Length: 97
Ligand SMILES: [Zn+2]
Image 1 (cartoon, protein in one colour):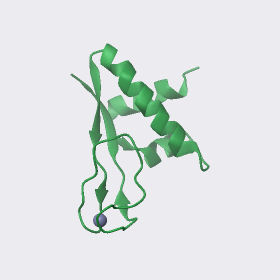
Image 2 (cartoon, rainbow, N blue to C red):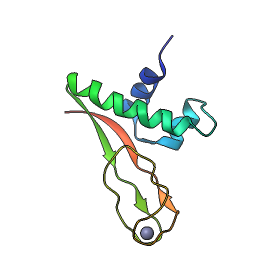
Image 3 (cartoon, rainbow, N blue to C red):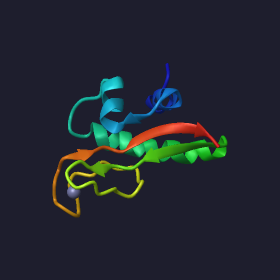
Image 4 (cartoon, rainbow, N blue to C red):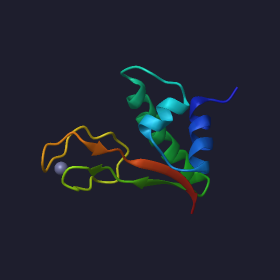
């Protein structure tokens, strides 16, 4: 039985995913699921370093004004510049260093 984190690693080695897309792939629903995946991704990023791989982050972007968020593992809810909540989520992918 593969752990949830192992499943996430396998997915991200194939292509890039947003946290919402990962939640769908892992059949995780409910309020806390994104937070769980954020925590998984943070742990995975540390694990990968030891394997000579890296978790690439394509930062979130405000779809209203184009503001680019910091490339962190998070799900931003509001744009700090224009206060819009129409946000393109960050995307994650695993790459060999
Ligand atoms: Zn904005």
